[in-house]
Length: 348
Image 1 (cartoon, helix red, strand yellow):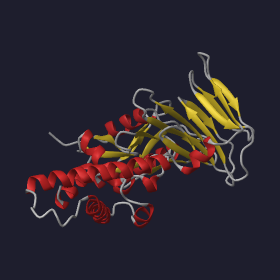
Image 2 (spheres, one colour):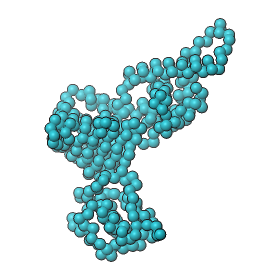
Image 3 (cartoon, helix red, strand yellow):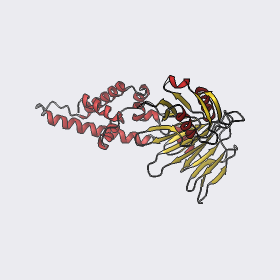
Image 4 (spheres, one colour):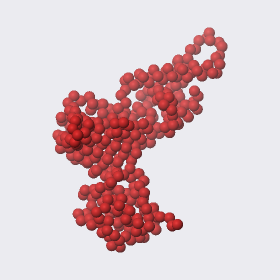
């Protein structure tokens, strides 16, 4: 295994193109790095990661390879490669298993919470949603089969619970005591908001849907000890109303988009909303929709902004409203991540 082979393997790992055996090998090699190495590496410093891995591998092979004066005959190149590779595997595997023995991959915050002695576990064994009232006034609605773990009394600086399955959270606002929800894959942090967390039991994918307020979602792992964290660009997302994210644990990736049926945001719109417009500039109509739903709407073609809109879009959901608006100005819309893009229809 040459240094160039190591670099190519790291690049394949970064692009999620490795086989299962290659992933196992590169993660074992990563286990050869010690804490001082890890502290010096910042995310996306690919060259630094590759350099430190190669240095540590070389050091291990030097100490693992016999250096006796009696070995006068130089082994063939093929045999040398086999010895080198076998020694690397043995050394890396030994260090990696020792590393796993002393380090848990989950976040320190989650481990501290899990070690608490006053946790209460509540499981919904019914076929209907089950509401649980917490001491701070927050409310959690568990779906059938879901389990919520929470302390009898929250800590002064923060509030923490863990969830298995699906739950709807209505969090009492307290900027000085943020609320954390842990599950197997992610940590969700809020101050005062309402949101849904649900986990697919078959795929371990976690979905977080925000109704009101703002939520920060990150992976539930000790990121400083993760090779994928060092090679990944994003390890957390910020969600606002009508946005959702799905965390895919296989490739440690967040897929963020709009919810299927956006709802009006309470307190973010005028008391009287009719949805009736009479020769109103298009940008005025779209700006009102942005305010009502908290969703960014972008007009791709500047010529479209010269249009006025006349019509009644009251009583319709957001996407139906956009259908009616686009129809009158000969345009169409598409959803791109958490934005809505309006484009002009091509003339045939």
